[in-house]
Image (tube, rainbow, N blue to C red; front, side, top):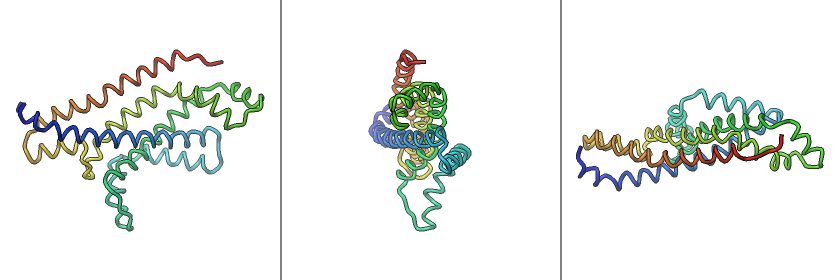
Length: 219
């Protein structure tokens, strides 16, 4: 193990970590937004849009992220649409993550008692107000474990984005192995920096799960 090389490589890994976090954070936020929209369209059985949402979920979950990225990065330029690797990475993570978030949130929505929805409507709340003040808070609390697992999953999936020349952690590690033949050092730093990213998030998610379980809602 060449510790001198490891110390010299640290700044490059820090830069790659920042890019990985940016990619993952944007992808997760957009995935949650897509998931919220699709889950509600399915839960409330909105015509046509419900079918489209289900078709999107099946397509997204049954195609590899790598294929999706190749289509965006190499396929779209054939029809005149050129996107940066980072943009393709965000779109790919959102397309994949949105379907998983949709299923997680839908599970939470379906776990909320129908009686609470009917009670909200009976006291004069609109469907949107019932969703906002009664259904969603409980649904999100129930879905926190699944949402958290999906967040960790998407952060780990950023490692695939290096295949389209985005200088994330995995891309940097492969570059160092290929150009400088420092396999052990590159992989050691890769593991350490992924742990630095994922462990605090895992702990945060566990805390949110405990807080969600301790929350009191009406039956």
